[in-house]
Length: 347
Image (cartoon, rainbow, N blue to C red; front, side, top):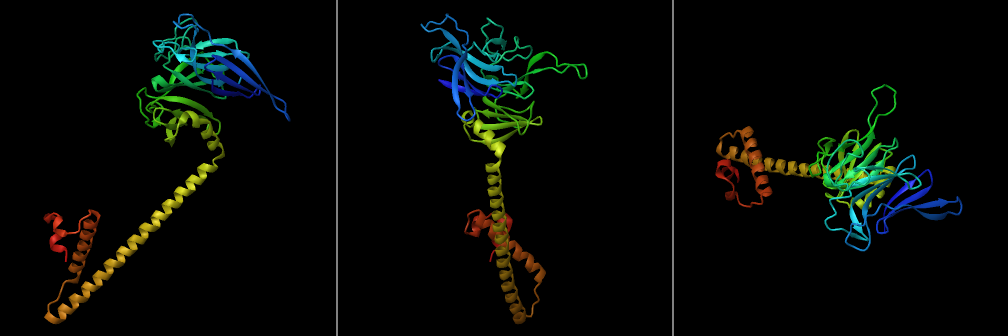
């Protein structure tokens, strides 16, 4: 069953991880006008006979990526016999293998060759580092490998340390915990404090010069750029949407339409708010004019002068009290606390 894909630009071929057949295969595209495909098996991960099943056990492939030089990275997690994950063997087989373009095993990252590859969280040299359920892989244009360490809720990086000599060669390759505090969550922010739930998919963003991560545990798409992680899109199924998301990032047409729609909604809300305020002001002025007219008639009849400035303040308080009653779902002033003075102000 083909489960993981990666494209090798140099050889114009598609690299496929067939997880049930336990094979890494190459689909080579040939021709310009008429394209033909040639399928070959590059490598078969090593097997062991310790299984109680008839079929030999092999490490379970969980991720795939190609490097600019044509080499192939494959991540593994646990052991499988045929199409079944072996019970009790999920603690072993947590590593990444590096193959040459013709399928020769070059290096193992996360365990020494012949080691069981028990899961853990250790940085350092490739053979000394430890992972817990490594899955999605991505390679930057300069050749650095980014690893979704799902069990540790982190994104790890295999990169060369910078040389102490200015302009000199890059130093030894090491694995470090690049992003994630190690605590499960989906907190945004700087790389050292950001949180993942269960990152399983990753892709290099050539436009934004960063990486896009599918966090399966929180069903969110995260983006890392300029030493900061943020939430890009949410409530998606990231394992299946990551490639489509990269296409949206490149064209930006759908993103621009969504931004335009949100702006139109915001403008409509502002218009409605302004209209409501205008109507509210008109009602208040109408009530105030009516009250002043009645007060003028009372002055003419009784000869007693009324303080209109004070009356205007009382009217404002009455209007606010009525608005508070309506917002609280109350229809009777007796339902309001007496200490607010509403019962005395309402007409």
